[in-house]
Amino acid sequence: MLDIGFHQGISLHSHTPQDELRLVAVASPQDEAYSLETLWHVCLHLQRLGYPVVVLDGTARESDATPGLKDLLAHDPWSVGAGLGGQGDTSTLAVLPAALGLQALARHPRQPAQPLQVLQPLFRRYAMVVLHAPVATLASPLMAGTLTAPLLIMAPGKAGVVNSYRQLKHLALHAGLAGMVACVTHSDTPGQRQLADDSLRSLRLCASQHLGQQIRTSSIQAGSPQDLQRLALQLLENACTISAPGAASALPSHFTADIPAHIVQSH
Image 1 (spheres, rainbow, N blue to C red):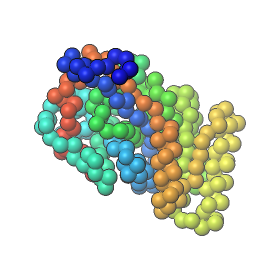
Image 2 (spheres, rainbow, N blue to C red):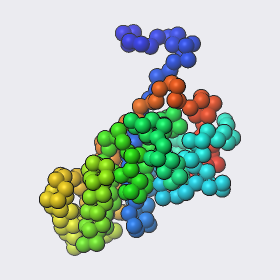
Image 3 (cartoon, rainbow, N blue to C red):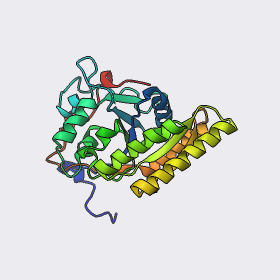
């Protein structure tokens, strides 16, 4: 009763509260297959925790056969009124091609202070947007105004350390962002655990000495539900929020009411 700004008749004035949308970023490494399986499992854990997720896949281009973010940004009114395709179903994951749409937002942001703010009215029925894209995309003006640390998924060993350091350096130099790193092993042998720990120790040392960053790292066993849930909780803790843009820039309600099911891929 003491809330300021809202009252029982506020809907008559076409004013409704806007929930903030959580955003996390996951960098796509050269070995796509290695990281994608981990990403899908982590997202499914987030959904089981009660956070419906939509993945914007910046490694996949939109097309006539597979429309995605580019088409949503263009206000292309596909089948308005269609269902959300898996909304509330924790066994499936909504994934949209987004390479062209993200490029367009980076080059010509509709909200210059925070380009990704335009996503809020599009995906407000979800709790979280996972932006999966190459480091070059994440280090573009696209991430301006966000306070999230992109997740890097690393393979244990020297090559994994070198690749992850290059990604951290790119984020630091071009976007002023620090990343968080998960080293994923596919067996739980003492040798693999030691290799993962040594790899993360080397990466933390390089980031501290050469980038001046104290990065957050974790060792994840791919077949361990406990480890994957722990990583999901870390992402949730690290997520930033996207507020609704001004009323003038918000998309029409008939367009944002539902996301057509035929553009949503299940994984």
